[in-house]
Image (cartoon, rainbow, N blue to C red; front, side):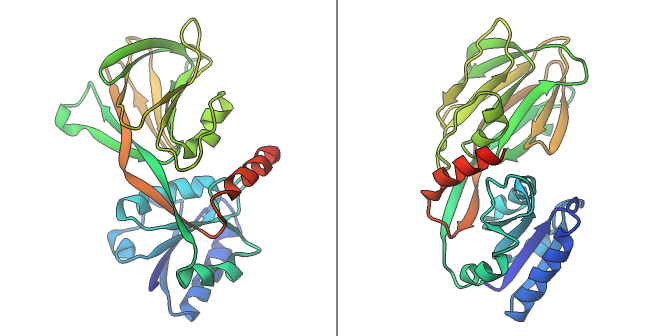
Length: 278
């Protein structure tokens, strides 16, 4: 590997110092690199050009941000945990310096995770101005400021399913199945699954069960009149979801690639430990 990116969580005071330590270590090994705090917009095209690997320093939120930059370019990510849970991270600050040479020499395996594509079709804009987003964890439509239920119409493959009266709906990937979806009673999918989970949040007088949907299906969500909500992409991009707006969701053409040293089966052991930590 000749070039690396280092994305660090600016909200963790020690992350910048640790990022600089890794940067210096990589330079000593002949690997050019760039540093980027999460407080800024994405790394520019010059930084991303020919980047072979991205080190994400923080928690799962930092990885979610890194995934938006890395996945369109097929750049693998190695997560270094400085957060609270770190479901997606591979290393920690105690072992990172010792383990990084293994990645640089080509060891490890590629853990590919399915993503979601969410196309927002705004009633206030012409169709040519459709907005498209990609999420590693989930796409959430939830009530905005008013403490009241929202009504959300759901179609799958253009077939009407139901109109939820709910606090919101979570559409998640297998990766996101251990996040907000899990907190709302959704199932945990094995990490390499491409299935999609639809979980209502506190549904009232409508279907309250979680649906597991094949990755070939297309889910459409429509805002019902007088019920204003918010669209959230991985909890980081938040957009008003207004009357007449629609969202079409399907499996993204992108995947997030993680470089791992631990065997695939370690997910289940780690899952129990992480859930106990929570």
